[in-house]
Length: 105
Image (cartoon, rainbow, N blue to C red; front, side, top):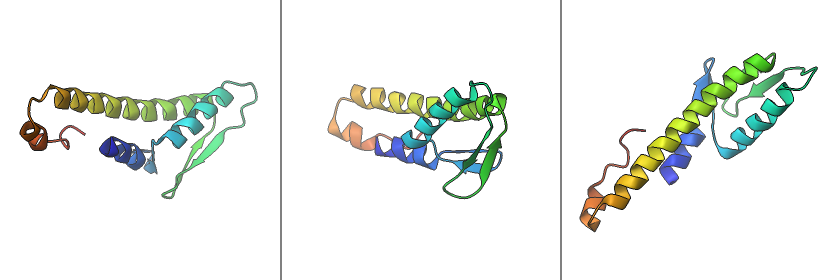
């Protein structure tokens, strides 16, 4: 799980801006999606903690941003479960110790 969390924290990029995909960012994005669907949405500027910003001028821009981040998180979730299932299927401690947890991320 620590590797998974580190991958979410490292995140992805959007428009050349590094965007973490940790639970706090996911929660912010969920709230932003709700707001973007409201009449008179004024837009939003996402400021990355690592520098840079993404200007989201309307609901379509928020949706595109959310789609990229959502796909990234879904992919990491899928890799996590592949590894968990593979480890669960291993028969010995030696097999577990030899397993390459870094593959596929």
